[in-house]
Amino acid sequence: MTLIEFYDSTAIHNVLSALLLAPARLILVGADEEDLRKDAGRISRLLKARGMETDIETFCLSDKTYDGIYKAVEKIVMKHSDCVMELVGGDALIMTVLGAISEKYGIPMHTADPTTMSISPFTKKEVYPPISPVSLSVNELISLYGGLITQSTAPPISNKPFWQDVLSVWAVCRKNSGDFNSAVSAFHSLCPPESIHPYLSVQKLTGSLSPQKAEKVLALLEGLNENGAILAFKKTKKDISFRYKSRAVQEALHKEGSVLEFYTYFAALSDFGQGSAFSDGKIGVEIEWDDAKDNLKNEIDVMLMDGITPIFISCKNGYVGTEELYKLSVVADRFGGPYAKKAIVMTKQKADISFLARARELGISVISDVQEMPLAGFSKYLKRTLKNKT
Image (cartoon, rainbow, N blue to C red):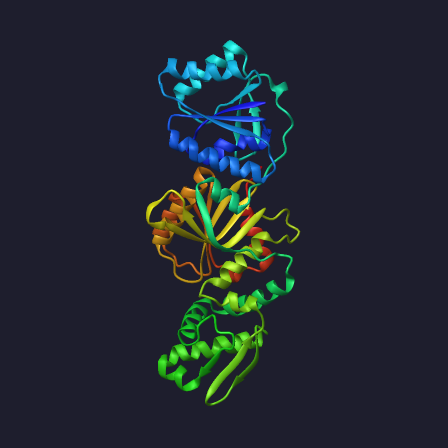
């Protein structure tokens, strides 16, 4: 099978038919040679990494009139007798040309729907093979849209000791998320998160922080000790010492919002008897744009994949301003296109009507008061809110 695909700015449109049909040849047709070159390279890397032996060619339209497009497509059709044509990329003029070519030469035409991962033939349904749903990893999706993941974390869900330790930190956070943020920030101002053997001088603690913040730091450490997240906790009149139980605890305390990011990721990828979890996910995804100047980067707290649908999540353990909605929307639109889903996961949400209204306008789901939900309930809510209904 030779697949004729017209270039579309939404990257998934240019590759979905190839993923589902596994053609011997993909011919990507478009009006901009640079766009074709970049997209063909990204598609080629994706398919080769999956072991697919699809030859990829590009065809740049020099004449964009009806007659010019007709002659170009006709030339491809006459060369390859096993053609099928995808009707998603391109404008109305191109669609008109393809219809005329199909009618004259009996070329099968179809559409591919990213929301259902299905092929819908218009003619000659018998030439289309049975298809199976496909999934993309976070790395594959970002690469397809012209990005490079320079940093991320994805601890395996099967590592039960790791997640038990993360949940022990979450148990402290959920009791008072506002104080937790403040306490973690104040603690790290005195003892950097990379410290292997944390040690605090009581004099330094009380001398550098206000009485309220010093009290919050002490409450944080005592809570972590009670929940088994830190060991060998010792507090005297002169100093405070302890050790982290594990790397998981240290990572969950790395910054104010780290534990909420880990908790969201764990809830999303865990199966509590509610059906399938998300197909892939990462935490702290730092994305570098490969076609932007000045090394432009974005960071997403949690990124999930539901088959080929990307989900971008911002996790905020405290106050969230509307600027966070715009940041989330920009990166989701750039690296997910119109099919991307977006969400803000929060521990608290003030009754800010303008914030909620703006989130709705940008298509962002607001999941608030997470600290009030049991883990299984939060997992179920995430899936109900963000998974595709197919």
